[in-house]
Image (tube, rainbow over all chains, first blue to last red; front, side, top):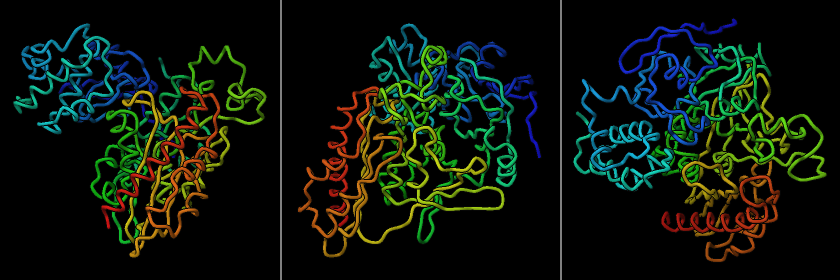
Length: 162
Length: 332
């Protein structure tokens, strides 16, 4: 009856399969950064409050610092590195650049992925819905206004999808 | 922050999960969203030998609308509950409570079962390992003192769940299963009132679902919450109310609950008795608010002073009742 999961796992990250060994106590954040060297995903508070470590699991934003790597085997994980295609920025990234929605950039990966997920679920969110969606992502530089403007520009144009 | 080592269990069905609970009992912690347990493990408030993930058990998720009740699977996410049209229509306070849990991303990860069974909290307990090593052990850490209320012989930690007060207001029941047995108890009875061991759930039991009974008549409900950061924080005090009226417009029954007021949610039963049979316009809101104040503990152990939180219990109960009454008027 004792069913203990082995430590060999296969993670699907940005449409690539990675076979790796991970102890059960390793978070998805640690595996992404330390094993797969996808350092676009940032660690800040480490306890789910700030949103810096946000990645997408099956297109839903999750806190990778609170997610066990072994628990997301078989799911589709998207990090900020997986958003751009062939060196071209994704429209959400383009909008952040165009609206100067980035200053130090530490919150940007999580913020952009959260915005991407919002627009995928709701292509035309209101400003209130945008502010609510990113309310779990802390930015200490921009004051949020530029970020909201960037997302709003895509909502207005309805062109978040390639 | 690194997690302590543990062995990972991933049952494929509920029978297997119950069998694992029977085998490992106190040495296993259950995760579904992981937002509570993983955090506590990082701070070394928990170091279980086994962690069992029940998120993938299909039979524990989803919202079922039956003839006389609505059943929420324990792994239903708070986002699903907040967005559910039937919950928003029939049990607005429950949808409002789910909507106000932490941030949208946490609400999409966190489950109703995990939210109900979250541990009590205290500023002298919910600290990093390095801070705690410099503090004497309080009741909750196996000691004999309370660091929040000097000289206290009991633990003053606070239950800060959002869902339980709203569910209790709707007289919800929870389904507890263990190998070979199932019991259904009112959610209020899940709480011991003891901050050290806040729940009466057995070490071999799993909370598998929540039953919200359907009520006859016109009703209104609301959930109100005090927190510093609207984007993330636990309630510092909260209030849920549900009011039913009959065809004559008089209140047939009501339930009011105060959250984050002590180690368990507290029903303001005196208030329910006071307004029974009254017309909505006859209610003495100040008197009800005073009852909530009297039930709220005012220990200085959370991010705001206890005295302020007690005063806000008055305000929030009043607002919750007013909003429920407005819903009732719209329903009539």
